[in-house]
Length: 302
Image (cartoon, rainbow, N blue to C red):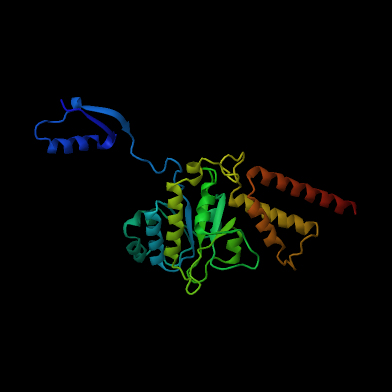
């Protein structure tokens, strides 16, 4: 009797048996002839690091073809959430044509009028930036950006902002971000098409979803926030905090709106770097309220 010991993936077992029978002239292989030592599940590249569905936000895109190209770039890298902020021409057949097989992403894309609508529930916001700023912001490349995103708790909602084709994101939009991502292009010619920029970011996200360096090396990351005890504050909570902070600073005479300089921008950068959670936001706003009440009381006494 012919005995074959086989170690195979369970979903291809029958195909192997069929191939052996094709070439066996004197014996037909049956299940009784086979000792299956172990059935293995097909390899799952996402076992170590499940893919994160990051929100790709295109701010005021001017050409519908770039919207379609961005959707195609996203789908090839298994990124599904597309948000369009006040697109100039959309819907448009040119977007569908450029999307090719990613038409479904266009059909499920969320179209909003303001950036606030696009990111209000997000806990981590990343802005793409092609140039240096007067006040430096935490800056990473595309690969570091992917690492940062995968260090987030699984419950965190993440958005990556892409600006207008001709001038990118403005300063106010970039100030809403926790960090900026930059693609180090050639010094001779560094112009990236919008869809190209989306493709690069999505590629790094895809690679990070397939291989987890930290798990593979068996070490923990000291900056890992996966086990943080409180959820991070979303964009809406952070914006209300900054409004409360500015209001309080004006009331106590520390900040003069007529001569703003860069005070509020620097404070935004400070708190973006710290990454406040919901409890910390509540504590800080409680302090601001106490300061306001004390200020009112002192003014009444005087």
